[in-house]
Length: 285
Image (tube, rainbow, N blue to C red; front, side, top):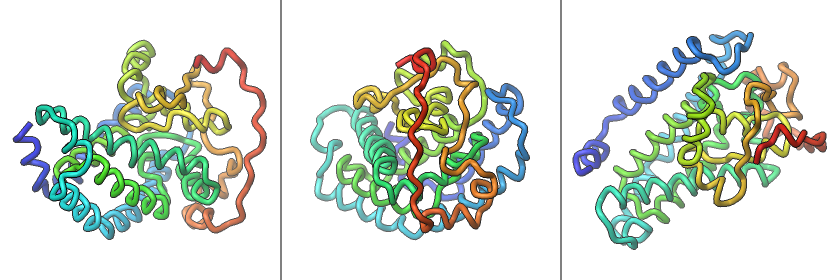
């Protein structure tokens, strides 16, 4: 564990980029070999559109990275946060730090974005993707990237995480986002078993259902226990029948155009229509 901490303390940006690019490549290949959905869409164009948002996310993240580093240094020097308050071996301390970071900077901000109308207008760019695959993990409005950065700073203080643990978390978070958005099939029984601990593809696909109430479930990214603890977990009988997108923006002229996607948060708010009753057999719990 000491070696892992030492590695991430000084990990070059090129290494982190290579890890994340490698993850996208692996899941992209798996999508072609064992797809969950056999979707007919322009895969490369779709990847290019979502890739544009990667550039804006990188700009925001690099611009605010110094604040996250300062927060980690301050939290460590002041010895505040869970990692300093709960005694135990190093591996347990790191695990607790990653869990707190995941709870606040992934699950909590995600929940808030669904509940606060003006924040939802930024987040729905992610949900407007009607062809969810590994590149959907890249599709975030730059405004949402700011929200996530702010909550990451809050999470750093709550966790008391040094920068190495922050980098470990951010790397895991990006890889898990690729994993649970990827359009590939794993055995249903294995997926359900894993979903007791981590967020799996079948679990997260429910969150991308185009209608409420399923849109407002399964907010987690790494650990699934937050949704189970806070009763936001849902499972459907057949994930292959899920329709992706968001019901207020199902027109491709709106959800497949970068300029419009960037402008959506500044357009008038659209109230989501009341969803039709969901058949009891579709939702398992």
